[in-house]
Image (cartoon, rainbow, N blue to C red):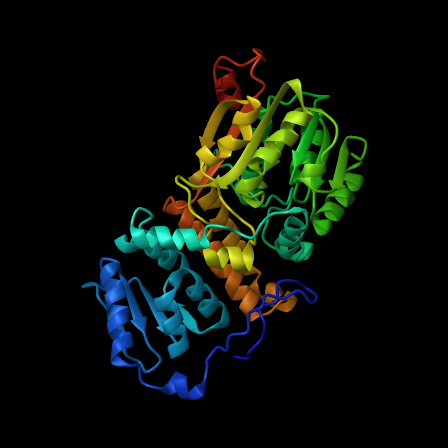
Length: 433
């Protein structure tokens, strides 16, 4: 396999990653040292003997569980083994992306095992766990220029790339909603859009401000299906262009305004505020600023919804994901999210956790991604293909095992008493009961 860079765009944007797949030929063919095997076996033992085997480049195997392993990690050189033993959360991703390791078994299962069998010594309440969290806690800052760079890194890869595996109707790159477990990704994303609009009690003529609009699908849906007038902010040039073009094709330009600008520069007022899938990129140091912008824009009878990946307790984003896939990303806890609302007396009305919905969404994305791997390979290279396979697989595992959550938080001005008395309005089948 050739030694190529992990390119993160169609043109010249690349990650600074140039690991050799086989490493030094002499190192790759060398017999493992006894201490390396001993350390590897000790790590498996600290993990309470997970159903994993490690196969080394000389054909020898390391295994501590007394059962047939569910996954075998095939390590091709000493450098890869050393890196994984020193920093598995980070080095495993690079080693897999470059082909320095292969997986015999299911990649999602490997990620699930890594989460559920995590050594006690690395627990957040232990000293070493606290040190590791402290060292990795601060994601790259989301300043005005930093945010633009971070979004450009991920979302401006190529619209054609995302169209290969997202839903074909509204290009939703956020958690879908499975009212029926047999839904296709298209059906589940439309259900999610309706679910959001019902939570916001959206009415014809409502003026909406949206932060982080992606490819414009939610705004388009609100204008088309609910008669709202939407002003949406985004700093991804590729996404804004796509959104404007689609609004023009649908003949909805009079109800949709897509603005390429940072949320901090938002102007005007609105009846409804919404943000779906942006809070992860804001940075917790900016939550009070975000709250101040919402407070500035939201009218006295205004209501809003924030939909975001989150956690049950504070913890930084996986280092490899933050470095290679989502720079500047941080999934907040509900407690951290309250820093948006509390300073401005915004009342939280409803919180829903859609964690398992996101796991299923990712399963469908990964299946479509895999069915289009040849096209992805033509756009980028093999290292990109492997990195994104790992990212999607690891994300499935994170939501299945509870490492990540998906919160929808509905809020409103505190003196507005025009509120539903039950949640019946959220569910179409129950509204007729």
